[in-house]
Length: 156
Ligand SMILES: C[S@@+](CC[C@H](N)C(=O)[O-])C[C@H]1O[C@@H](n2cnc3c(N)ncnc32)[C@H](O)[C@@H]1O
Image (cartoon, rainbow, N blue to C red; front, side):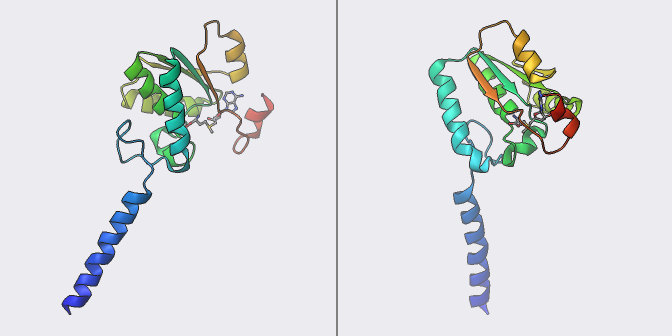
């Protein structure tokens, strides 16, 4: 009988060890609980690059419409870059054409206390970039998105 308990215990232990090994967090930069999956390696490279160029102004087109919940899918770059900006006294401008995306991203930015380092703009990214008159150190183009709202895409 004890044998069955042991097997069960080992199974549970194996499950958690497996989860730990496969986990793709950006810890210690972000809390361990946020799993960035396949984007972990590209985020690490990007953070390395931001450090190297000592970026001052970052622009992201297409904001984190799912907040940090999008870590596993879209990537949650607004929060990752915003956090980097906060730690490095830089500034992130994130622009999105959708009111919904802007509202959701803004909620997460405020929740993460990044308001002094991140501004979310409601605009077509092309118009925003055409009118942006400061030097840009890092430009992250992530607004090529045609899956949900066809009308939004027609405006591009
Ligand atoms: C994939 S999501 C961006 C994900 C985000 N960069 C992140 O890492 O979490 C794409 C976003 O682009 C926005 N978008 C689509 N067309 C756009 C345009 N012409 N100008 C600005 N944003 C646009 C959509 O509303 C959507 O919120």
